[in-house]
Image (cartoon, rainbow, N blue to C red; front, side):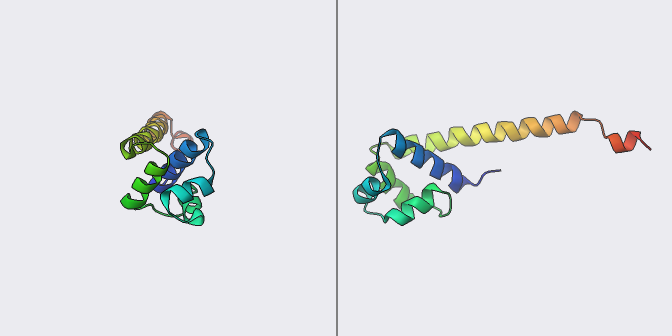
Length: 99
């Protein structure tokens, strides 16, 4: 399963790119170092609630919308994991039937 910080980073990056903003643009607006934002977007750093609020503000999007986007991505991922698990549970165990 994908780490939550990875999903947060993907949402933030997608929002930034869709607005045509660079890391430098967001860095200046949020007053956060460009390198740190890059690490958050790549899922290498965990973003605090204060950092998320600053980045959402810089992207001019409500923090609640960012979190809803992350939630939607997590729901899709969980559904695919559940689907794989259910397929695995109905697949016959070939090794048991060969004995």
